[in-house]
Length: 375
Image (tube, rainbow, N blue to C red; front, side, top):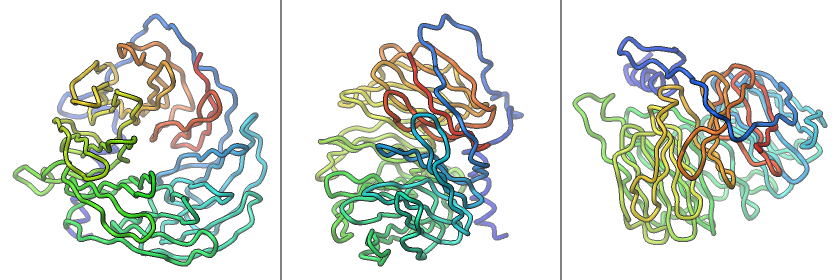
């Protein structure tokens, strides 16, 4: 193993540590009882197989929930009761989340495979991209936009998998392996990169529209200087915001890329945006609500310190996060107070849930898929 791979592996340990405590006294916070004013209701759950270290999370369409496991199996589940409609074996190890759109389901593999299926589970095409796929492909306007672990973004024809354009850039020697993909809005592809860079790319031809710096590497060692954007940016009609691990959080004008504001926050989990409020989970497990216009703190809750808290998922009234023990936590969107808690299968909830009807669906590291509603 090369030195660079060792350092990257160490950085990954910092991001997704499996230990329940550390020798520096930064043990995960114990969970204390509180007066619950809401309740999680589990509508159904099904196990689809281990996630392992893959970046797997479900995808939802109007009449299906799609979920996969690291061994290469793709499931279509009934969204009402979770029953299996079909299962296909891709023949490769799936490494990125499921992508859906325009009647297709797309999955990516550990050895650069990319496969597209129709809603009946029939393979439409299979191709290879430049390296492993660690995130969900995005299907927009007849294109499959896929990001690979070598930092490249490619657009392929949804019809036959033929590449239409490729965006590539130089990357630092040391980067953190992560599952950040791309966000596509109004003909623009937004993506965060190593060294704190955020880019906007033209969906139709792959041309760079703008590039801005969320944060700058700093520190005395190469490990300390890692400042990668390891989660998805969030976008609305006027602004795009992103956060870097060991870096900063910043919001930019979505058309020109001019910085609107920035503040010191380190996060490897990510953001959510609703109206005038931006929500984040930082690297220590603190959940924050911030004013989108200025970045000032509206509230913060640090009761889940070091519990490897997922990115926030938003309902009308609540902020929902999962932790390393498979517990769901609901916080009030008004003041951040805890209002509900529930258990799943005891394994880590790696990513924010995905909306499903009036509730949401999530996947645990051990492969549990849960449909949940909060009331």
